[in-house]
Image 1 (cartoon, one colour):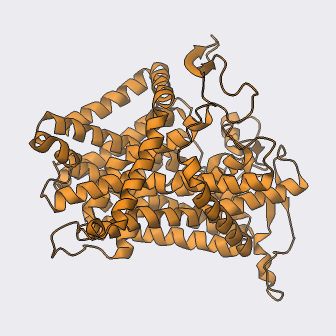
Image 2 (image 1 turned 180 degrees about the horizontal axis):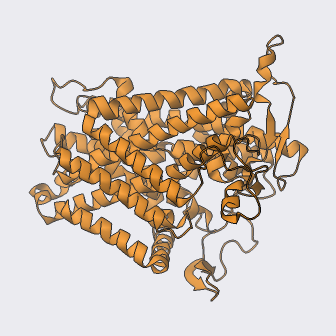
Image 3 (image 1 turned 135 degrees about the vertical axis):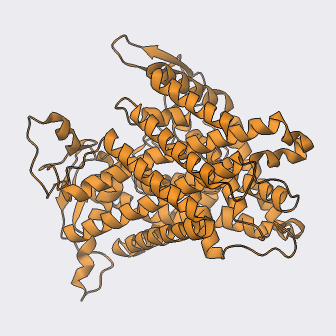
Length: 573
């Protein structure tokens, strides 16, 4: 505990005291990793998937029990899946569900599929496929590898529930010495900063959802509170979303702002609730909260399936899923080797207070076509690094709740089913976001931002059900907005102000509970590792690590210097 806390707070102190220097160092590290080790990230994920599928297919291994022969599972399959899924994805599905397919469709990051040879239909299908790839088998595999290995070591060999036990086949009794301590310190550090990365994303979307509820924001207009005037520029900044300006823009009923102060308060509130959840216990706290969170998310995404153009969504998921299965062997091994060829990343400053990592030298294809050098590290390597950084946390937590399962059941429920549910979620939200872009593109240019009301009938509506027009409230260019707004503006398109307000509130509560679930699961896992594998760690230590997690997130958000992405990029590095 002492050494882990020392490492964590040394990192935070350096980040806050040397803001620009630390940002420079972290970005240089990040680009060095992607320049030198992309091949290892890509190849290792594929190798582990092959190994796990082999274990699943061979009865000798598939029927191996994670525990003694008479051990029974502690949780039902639904509770078990709810806990591991909510823990594994955290707020990412909410934050990226609508937004990520749009980014891929419009070619953010200069991907390889924006050549003129690709038409928009092909790009839309490819956008969904790439999203499935980032959130599918390759994302979940680090969790499964660590969770399965740790379960075997703990429940069949009697070793402690801590990361050092994974190295027993290599080091034997050596895990009880300094090498084991180093592994556990690194696991705690990765867990805490991995959770903080998601907290940083989730708190921004929670803040935006609160602001929208307070102001009654709908179709680009605020409805509650007095309007801001030109003499209040800091407040006026609350009225912009990406390239779009809300008008009229009001102060809202409670005066909630989108700023660092509000986000710190939200983190403190979430930390308090997460601490209470952990103190209540695994079965009555984390398990019940995960179950409710999962149900809320399932209700929302299924509602969107039926509020939107249902037959189109099913068509889009079917097409893109087949494309994912067909294209997976190619994209899974893609490193953009030729696009990155010759790219030399270095730090540069223009002397006017602007600095960053730049690319020197001629790089990429001589004809200038194909992917840019930055797409791989902005997307695939960033995601793989993020999933891997969460692996000690999620793998340990999954191992803790999986006693009594068979290895085959474990692989199905932690690799196959989560992938299918992510495809279900991303397919529905992504298809609807792309439909919105198509509707906008037929009548406007993608360079235009705004809202356009529509009374067009729904293609799948029943002749006598006039309420079936409820998903035709407006069209908008979602690509114009900041990521935190995109989900809420998509949900708002399905009906009147009242329905939009209800859907926003439902999504906000679901996001909050997913947020709390990832935080309390992280705290519980850190407690176990810091307590040398005690599956029921001391309560005082639980409070200590829950508070440390919240304070670390607050410190990094507070120390971002007004740049909400800076601390997240440091954690990503």
